[in-house]
Length: 142
Image 1 (cartoon, rainbow, N blue to C red):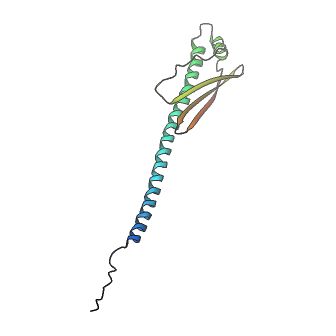
Image 2: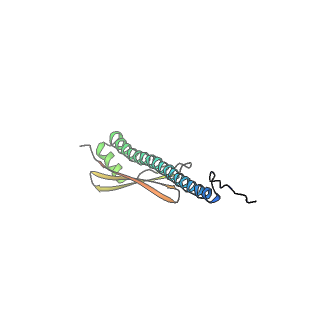
Image 3: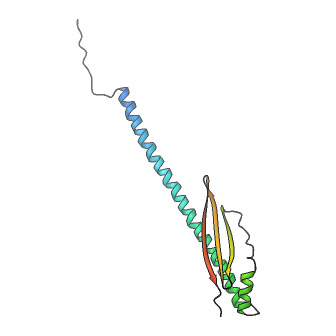
């Protein structure tokens, strides 16, 4: 007796299943990579915004020192400007629970101008990043 075997073409073979699984896995890895990169970029942007605010705060701190020296000096406004221009900036106590560090520097450019730089740095991942703000403060008193 000759038996005829009927060919069943309705299902997937093992090779087809493995190919489909590998394509699905590669596409899923691509999506996960894009998501991880997006999260990393979001964290970097957040840290950069915070660093910008801290740098601006450093500039405003020195501007407040200048205004206080000029407005409230017992010897007069010009003496207050001269003491602000010539004296070193008072040290700031750095906070211990943050990844940011700020360095404020003062450079006298001429008798009526002082350039202030506020450099905020932080580490994220494997890199160190900086945000630097600069501003010139002038002797606004006659």
